[in-house]
Image (cartoon, rainbow, N blue to C red; front, side, top):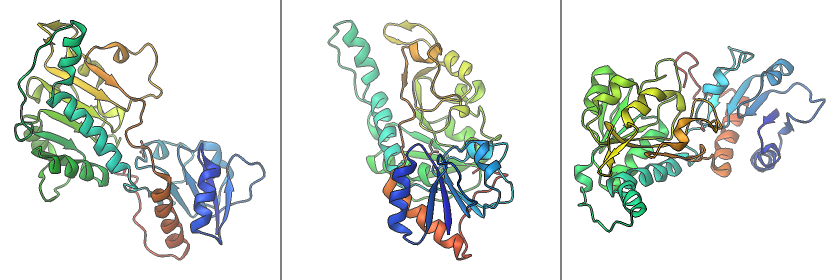
Length: 313
Ligand code: GLV
């Protein structure tokens, strides 16, 4: 089997994959004069890769989100796509979510402001059982994040398009379920895929459904959030060190266009914490196991779980 890799760390991927597929011929897209290959293993490949490779039998997406790949105008529509399914990203994103939830539940945002005024003032703790958290998106990663926070002691509400059952999680679905979830969570975590159905799902109406003083954590996709609506919900000013807006604060890791432009008002908002899409980097070892298994199965004609391009995930 002949495989082409498109990735910033293509060399490292080749070496890691060769250890699992010693009989495969593994090429790197950046090299010139590559022959036609059977499989493409890639993260955000440019259209030119598909224009050059016209005999592909399958694609492995080196990430959990397939939005960038599905939006590639040159992507051949009939080829099976396999994506990574929580190759360790779930735990990393779970830790990120934990940090964010604790930031608000244990009032680190308030203490930061108090410190700026040299103010020694303790805030009463709201206990974890009184801090319901909502997780939108119950795929492999959302489920792991929900379970980690549930194990920490927070009441967890999860939401997905279709009904799901997950032990220890109050699962909601559909429009009515989203409404029910939003009205009762103190922190909302967005882990939905970027699809036409999820774009700007966190808009003005849905932000208004959150209880006053709720917080938002987005380690998912930037397109889920209607940015002007978020800024409006956060408000600009502060009164007595408290938020003037409906929303208390936001921790954001993903943006519709990355890197986030220097002139974005998000950078300077006092109630927004920004991280550079670092919540869940793909751990190469576990991911390479999944890629190796997928390539092995596809080359033997065995069934593999593939992406539904219509659904977008
Ligand atoms: C990263 O954002 C991914 O989709 O894996």
